[in-house]
Structures are given as structure tokens and as C-alpha cells.
Image 1 (cartoon, rainbow, N blue to C red):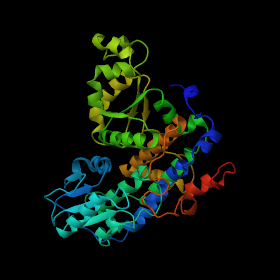
Image 2 (spheres, rainbow, N blue to C red):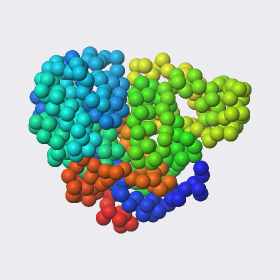
Image 3 (cartoon, rainbow, N blue to C red):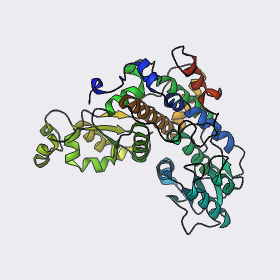
Image 4 (cartoon, rainbow, N blue to C red):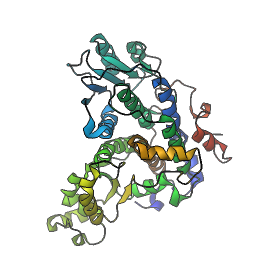
Length: 403
């Protein structure tokens, strides 16, 4: 698929804004506001005793739970378990985080009620109205920023990081600095930004040239592939796939369809799959790189081989953070990336979300069913949230319809 085949031109800011009838772009710009609102509710909570297990329950909870596991890494002293429903073994020694998928999510309401009855420490992220809020018994994290749940990954990961910090499992991030970086990312991803420096538009254009394949180049990026596939499905209607670097290297057919030019030039060339690959749609590979970890050195040789075998692929995740070189207060936020991995992870989440929104606008994809408010209360939409620097900047442009 080329730019000329798309219903909306990614290089036309006015057309993109006009196509965004569900206001997904300004909603994506509220990632920083989500982190602030969530961190405010987490602040002041009493510390938790180190649990036997941290259990994350809810539809789609596995993606954020996997990211937390990757962030904690080999230093984890407590298992982190993700499940659609509450495991039967949960008891008073455990901490349970419940993510509701809707106002009246019966599975989330039951999980919260049963976990509390068993004596577990329970934290619920849900609307303030409905059966889930009733089951939370006051242990509620309110989605104060009303956006579709498809764009709430940063808020959900903030909940998990904050609870893990309360339990002594993970150092508490500087959420204010992280929010500043997310605001800078939102400004960089504005449709009026020059295309060649817009990190979301360049990624979206690449993803639309074939069947998207996200390849994780390190443990955090491995977990990010699941999040990226979920985001592309919900916001762009793209059925993407995710593989670890090892899985990709062991799939010559995938590598042949992802390469360019003569497949025999690649180190993974397989003569038995070359002809079959030529008759099928090309695969558009994205090499995801998480923040630096101790395990990255072990994968450096494999990463180099994959980059050589996939010359058409782009690498996402190790680029300079948005706002680099800017004066304070951005400098404090940029230093945060160097101190912990949480900031770099949510930045990558935000870039993927923006790219998914742009890809959906370009192809005319239907917006998620829960736009515009998600689990938030009606009326608390983007234009009523002046706390976000990014949202204010998006509404100051005279050509924007949201002003």
C-alpha cells in the first residue's frame, strides 16, 4: 500500500484533522495528563507489605503486566501474575489490581469483590459509577482523564508501577517528569509537525506498507510487542503480529517476506520459501528497542544479524527523547529517562498509540466503541482538561477544530 492508495493523506495535516471526527489525536495527547491524574491518586497511599504475589486481573491486563515484569527484570522478589479472572488461590497474602473494561464489567466486579472477601489488598481502576466501583469498597483509581481505554496504557502502567513501588517491588518513578516527557511527545506528534521529524507519522506510514510485524529486540521490547499489537488492532484496525528477536531469527519465511531486493542476499535465505513468499503480501517489520538493560548485551549479536537481514525495517525506541536539547523544565524530564526505564517505556507506548491513531485515520478505520469518554465521566473530555500542557498546545492552533 502506498500513500496514494490511502483515503486520507498522512502528509496533509488539514485532511488528518478533518478525518479525526472522534477526536482521537487530542485524546492521545493526554497521556501526560493521565499519568498526572493517576499519580495524584496513588500519592499518600500507605505502604504495602511485600505480597506473596501481585495479581493483575482484567481484559487486556496481560500487556501492562508483562511490561511491569520486564521493567522489574531479574530483581523481582515477587511473582506478577496476569489473568482474565481472579485465580482460585488468591488470599490475604496477595495484592490484586483489577482493571475494568467497562462501567459495569461483571468479571472485574466479581474479581474485586471476591479478592476483598478473601482478605487480599485490592486496588481497582474503574469508573466511579457502576457495579465495579461498588465492589472496590473505596480502593478505587478513577480515570479522571476521559479518553477511550484504547489510549489508557500509560495510566494503567502507572497504576502498576505505583502499586509495585508501594509494595517495595520497584523504585517509584518521578511521575511528574514522565508526564512532562509525554507532553513533549504529544507536541512532536501534532499533525502540523514536519512529517520527517514527526515520530508518529513516520511510523504510521511505514506500518501501512505491508502486514505489520513488531519484533522485540530486548526483554522490555518483547513485552511491548503485545501492547503494540493491541493498540494497532483497537485504533487502526490492523491485525499486527509480534515476535521476539529469537522467534524472528528462527523464521526464515518471515524474514524473506520482510526483506527487500534479492532474498538470497540475506543470511537467513531459504530456497524452499522464496517462491512462496513472493506471492503473498510483504511484511512490514518494526524492530522495537526498550530502554537499556543488563540483558541487552546478550542480544546485541542477534540484533545486528536481524538488522542486516531486514534492511526495510525501522528501529523504534532508541531515538533521542522528544525535547532533547531544550531548556528547563524539559531538562529535568530528559534526565528521568537516564535514571529509570519507566519513562522510556511509556514514551514508546505513546508513540505507538499516536502511530496507530494516524494509521486508523489514513485508512478510515472505525474508532473504538467507547469513545470519547472511556471509563471517565461524560463531559470530562479533552477540552475540559487544562491541566495538560499538551492539550492546551493542541487547541491553540487556529486551524484545529477542537479550540
